[in-house]
Length: 199
Ligand SMILES: [Zn+2]
Image (cartoon, rainbow, N blue to C red; front, side):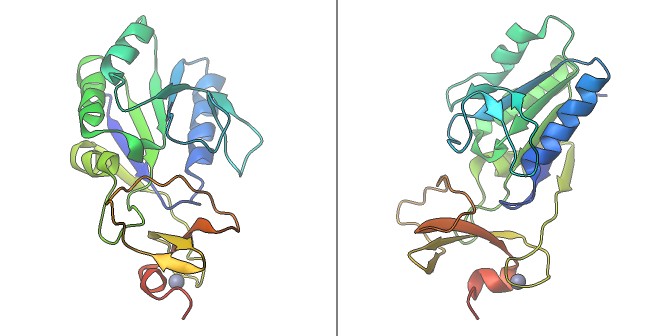
């Protein structure tokens, strides 16, 4: 039975590496997959999924908020796609997540989504993650460790000009960042260190 999977983790939980290893396993068995990635993520070269943890990269299609993913997959299906892998799934819209449930239920293709659960804004989930938590058949955590201690990281903390940013005036969850030294960046933390990062 095909299922909709949501594998979530914090920013440095090696989600893309997990996706690439899954892609490799399918293709090693001669199976066909489609990789998709949000065009909102500008960290990597267009049309590739890459990971800091691996040298291996994989071609992908990019989608934006207006892409009808059911139609896209139906048009690219030809009855022989074994799995759909989606990176940066937090950027999906709720409508696109529902389209993915239709891919699973009617086209009978498994869909594995990788993404963040929590946005940097205190108490706020990404739209795509919220819909996936609601609709997915299987939800799995990819674990990582707090930047400051040895507890599990569950939060994505935004640091701007040396200060933690837990709110947004616009309420916009989408800030594209990477774990780098700089003026505006993200780190993965436990809950305590999200609220008290430098204590
Ligand atoms: Zn901590």
